Length: 59
Image (cartoon, rainbow, N blue to C red; front, side):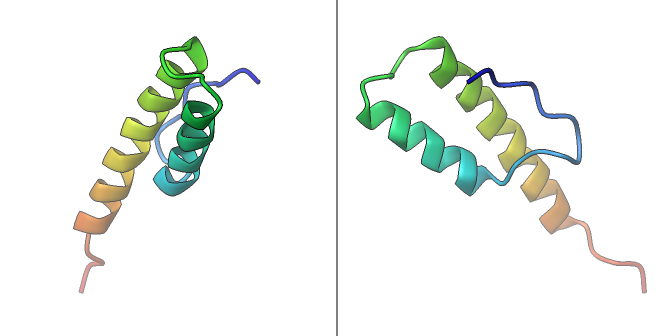
């Protein structure tokens, strides 16, 4: 399954990507291209979620 780079604001949740990574590792896919792409996507999702958590609504 090809992974397309996430665009800002449309990243899948980090928890969903993490579950895919765990499944891939359990299936022996550690170090595969798909694994590396998922790591990049996961990192982007974590940053996006952290940014959204830091933004508070205007009063």
